[in-house]
Length: 338
Image 1 (tube, rainbow, N blue to C red):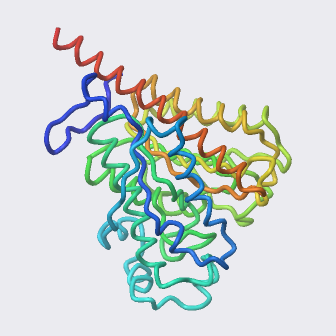
Image 2: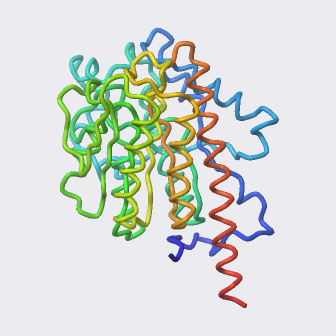
């Protein structure tokens, strides 16, 4: 299959001589942490701890950490009600709407944090569409945000915005949203329910939030306490469906809150199976040369180091797959030239 890559603005394609392009690009800003109040019921320290991990010798030469710019209002309203967007930006949401989102008490930085988080996802999308391979945002996967309201720690839906931006900006006709967070991607499902060009797949725990589920194109549900064998079987089913769809882009919500150590997960998945899950997704991307964006998703283990280790595994595997994709593209290009 030919690689689905849009030429960048400077017509630069990755080559074997351009070693920096083989590093995994990941977007992060300190406000991802500092924009959440220390008293909020959310493990904000997971971002700084993950940055620290990625800067250790085992990881540091494999990644380029980049700072995002803020998403624009026009980008947000691709997937959201302009009235809701403006109310958030103007600090006019009601207390009820804020409580439904969570992350309370809100800090004065909640608006720039949200815009930079969305900007990180969009930057990763632009990167893979212009240069190929895999890139990620060190936050996001905000799949509980709906068209006109936020929920479950999610204000705007980065997966939906990136899906619709891929259609409008890059004229794609097939985008796959693969959501393997323990919680169903309900907001993503509702926003994209009538968009035939986007396939939505959610593998999640049936007995977990949200308790009133939406309808994805494919919902593959796991019972509470399901373990490694069950999750990997569901992942295989999801990827078979994805392969049949033949997407030009994969948006991978890679939450690790299905770990047995997670405080909110209700599943019994090992670190090894979580890593195997990631390998299966990236193997498909490598085989089909599909640009892929990684969204971190949930992770609330106690102690939090289990979450950090699993996210470290995720990005390490992604970095290895990114090298494989770019090498294959380079080889195909060389073969065509020769």
